[in-house]
Amino acid sequence: MTQRDIFVVGTARTAIGTFGGSLKDVPNTQLATTAVKAAIERSGVAPDAIGHVVMGNVIPTDVKDAYLSRVAAIDAGCPIETPAFNV
Image 1: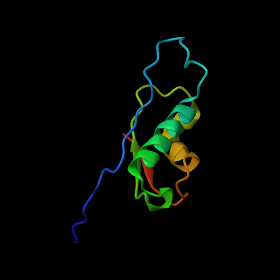
Image 2: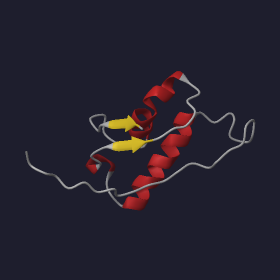
Image 3: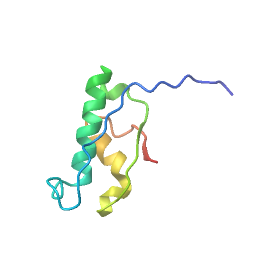
Image 4: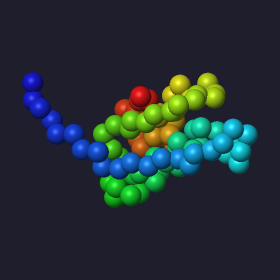
């Protein structure tokens, strides 16, 4: 087995909202896409060069949230072939 180097090239997070606050009508997928776009932009790496997208979510609020990282990665410009998963 060949060992491969792993690099974390960018991170970003969303704002912390309050229950019923100003973010209550913003879907998690939209918030996540904003964070992934910011991480990609800050990293300077082209979206098609991203190997994996990994993200966490504390409270899923919609059916799409089960695939939050996948939706956010694709909506942020990563190719559909880019693996993405939630932790």
